[in-house]
Image (cartoon, rainbow, N blue to C red; front, top):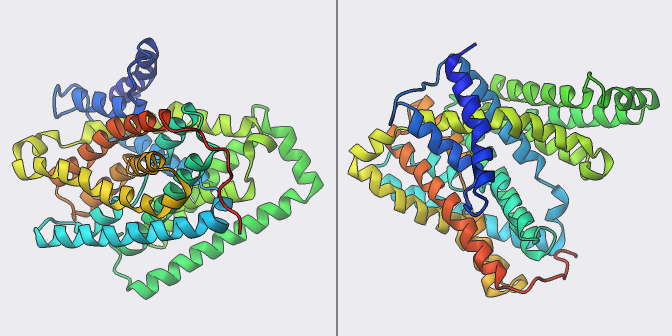
Length: 396
């Protein structure tokens, strides 16, 4: 057993307890876990290091985090008016990301395309609880925020995997490989649907689901690992497979809370109870805080990246202006500009492939930390002063 892993698990267990003792302190758990990793890691105290065991569990945590993010994507949200507005919003985001990348190239910042793509994603796992706590998850604000965040997450994962994964294959070949992966995904979906129509298999799964076999959870973990492996084998980043696995699970079972009430709870237990916190703490352990402080240019990138998040993810909320009030539109902009997990994933890929300077990566992650700390709190303050709307969003 790795001593570093035990320490990381101890941090993961203590953080929610400490936050529970101070309920008035509105700090997201992932933020505190990353900061704890920074303090305990080489950048500050040097007590804990990310050894091979910790890194392996953290990689599983990243895959499961992307899977859980994919499982938040409800494709039904992209129908009608909502779909058209979200598509316009995403187009604005992509154009803004391209503009930011161009500026970074002009400034001589390495890995500019990767940084532009990283800015496209919104942290669904952080935004959904904020909307739920505010009681706005089911009204137009919640629906539009989650639909926009889902679209950004999909675009970021696909663009990162197809265009920026360091493959030698030409773009046309990568698109063909992506099509093959999607076909494989569809084949898996059809196989699962066929199995569900088999009374014998359905009865067997139902019988084993809540026993020590935990068959639904085991099959889900196999799906995540299998698609991640398939994506990597085709030359993509494994996160594409993990994310698509989540999308597939949600597409096959759009309302798991109703059809299989215990299943989402078990997935959260595996992900947020074990694997994902290890990823967040390890991200803090490996964050090059020293390089950020020692290089004034990189330090100056923190407010610049924060402004870029607002430009790429916040500004597109204007496409929703006719469906929301002014305060609600600003709140949606702030929530969509809240990003951290995907920034961590992108910087990890960028440093591993050598396209991103560690100090620049630290600046991007630091901006993500600030966005998680500031933007949701500001959005909640705006929503508290905005009347709750009950009118549905969508339709033809």
